[in-house]
Image (cartoon, rainbow, N blue to C red; front, side):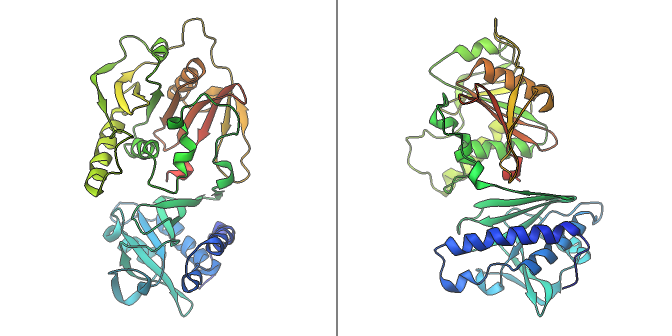
Length: 374
């Protein structure tokens, strides 16, 4: 395979390959599967092709495509090409419209030193490496957590000349007293090994409508949060609308999961309305389009701690105006005034920030988490 014309491809491939090696070494996969860890040369070539393809257009559309590194014999019911397609930016751009669907992946492997696309598949075995072309110049490398579709963990985000390696050691909440309820252990839901957490699904849906939005998570045992909302609170929902099944309910089946997904998407759509959507800790919608105000007698929020689950990214103390626009500033003020609540804010440009009160720092903590949502 030729040398990469995209300098970041090699640096990214080497670091990602090291992470993949550690995953394979600590996995419980059979020995025959452990040898299928994608090598750095193949990974570099694929990143190079994907990057240049992301900058091209096919009939005016930017390509969105998912590449899965596996051999056709490693998956169920693959669609195979004969002969395999030599993978170049041009060829990938041409076939991208055919596989621009959720759950469809282009199967990629090397044949005699040539990077090829052998076809497509819906089924990925555990620890399959996936490279997604998300937007022009924006790539995400992830791996499958299990046989079930949609279970991925992000490893790295490559954006132009920037590489962001997701740091799993920094994704947990600080080990200090917290007033957050177990529901609001948001970070744990973002890295759950089980089915994606409800809050994670809300976050993904909020980003999907690309209009920006704010979601406030308030305790049902207290009404103090109303002191931080302009009355009347936008559009009141009465009776409260349950967005998800009761937590005591047994694990739902596939049909129920699809219904849950539709309900979450409908509630996340409310966040596109100007103002905040309010949920309680039973996932009941109380209002949307609500205006956040400073609680009477409270001081304006002056500083927040900002962090991101990226290797080498240290937490910094900043002014809240540096986070973004009005939604971010309002959310920070709300959490300072209502420390037993949490807030999730989506920007139109795709950024996603989670706010909670840190008892360690005695200030609002803002966590940028879009790198684990892509």
